[in-house]
Image (cartoon, rainbow, N blue to C red):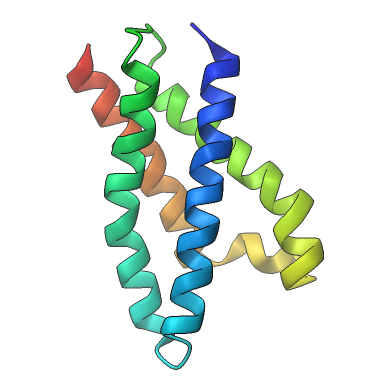
Length: 117
């Protein structure tokens, strides 16, 4: 069980999602609902990529725990970088769509871990 590996992959996933969200925000600024739909669709390959990178070394960590680590790293980086620099309010975290994205990441990573074992 390599927690540091999971944390570094979580940081990589956060950077990928940050760039993806930045591009979607400027490309679909006038279509807020469409932005979330595209994000949820893109979260599938992003989650699979992160889980695939982790399980490439045949680690035995439960996929759902790995997903929780990925989400925890993302929340920590959002609290450290995204909210203070771009949003300025911590109500950012109680958005229904954002919480759904967190859940999607945990479930997809968990399923990948289950299938991979």
